[in-house]
Length: 218
Image 1 (tube, rainbow, N blue to C red):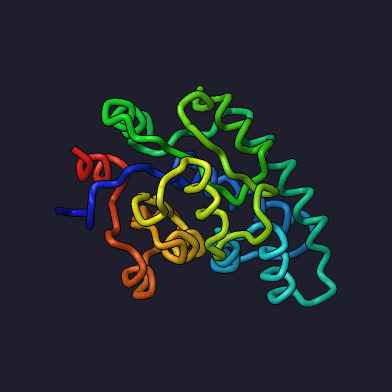
Image 2 (image 1 turned 135 degrees about the vertical axis):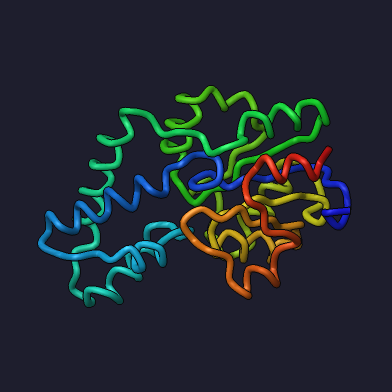
């Protein structure tokens, strides 16, 4: 078998895994930094992926210095993100086909994201995804964010499935660490971050896209 055992549930990350939003966030952050007279390299932005804002703010202060106004960057970048996103944020390749396949297999599924519920609602409304998930865990639904395993453990609990029987799909390093720490069969589907040796050790597989993962469940 490609996977260690047949999963009894699937838990998805959102940004960079279901929706192609990470590139838009990166564009918005870079543009806002320039507006503030700063240069925010892509490599620094990549270090922010998979964090809630406090973690991202720590990355920014490490790069710019302890007095950097990370809140101003956040506020401006969020406004720019929504301006860009008005044209629509595309689904990643294979999302709808994967969800259709889970319907056929009658496998429950949950969303486990570091984004706030408002962002989930925005993307779900745009693509009609709300009814396709049995549970949603977003920022504020847990005390300790990724890379702590708590979000994934709570998602498994919401589905009533043992974490060991859950397939977790992630694109970020912190997400992989969280899912693997929860004891789940973890698959990384890279987006802006490449898999590292650590990711290879924590994942049961690295996938090209969701089409490939869907094939493993056939």
